[in-house]
Length: 221
Ligand code: GTB
Image 1 (cartoon, helix red, strand yellow):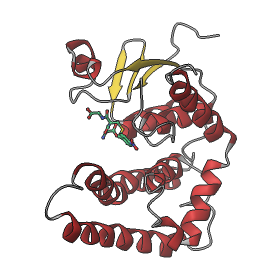
Image 2 (tube, protein in one colour):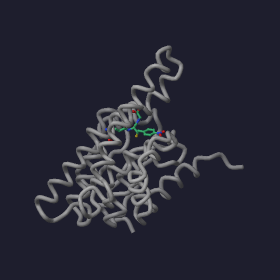
Image 3 (cartoon, rainbow, N blue to C red):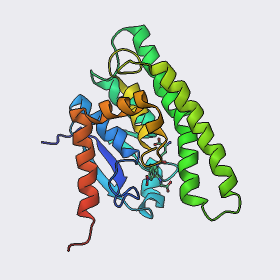
């Protein structure tokens, strides 16, 4: 039963990923599920996101946002960090292990995600450009360099630094953006890592929730 401080997040009313859980509300949903925090979702359209009410919450007119009492946050990484700080289970108690987990959270968002997003955006937005055929291999190579580095570091470990943490949650969602590209499969330990994340019951609940939104928006047959 939602209480007065039940957080509300925003998500796409109609996600362009067609229910594959690739939009960034997925990582926030997953974090909330991991810590057992109930939440509400406000669905927004692309036009609603650019209106003053949403811009007051998110200066760049995007999802996800997070509201909890007087607190309003944007940026999925900051939201996941906030959830991890306020609840047990997503960051280690040991100060050094916690600092390493936070380092990996930044690495996921600042070092691994950018080349993945750049490649993915190019495949969506730039296909008709005269330079696309030349540029795509460059973008693909940048992703492969990062995946190779990450794969070497992960080795045979289950998670980035001992126990599962918010860092793994972010890294798995970042790597999932490669879905359908065929790139991840070249690194079996990374593919296994993503599969381990996806197998977590909290992930499954989050995925089902965002898929339900997509299905509800489908026209009745
Ligand atoms: N740095 C911000 C964060 O981490 O929260 C980035 C937020 C962001 O890019 N939000 C996107 C958005 O609101 C949705 S997640 N876009 C609308 C806009 O900018 O007008 C990005 C996303 C969108 C679609 C897919 N997909 O279809 O696969 C995957 C990811």
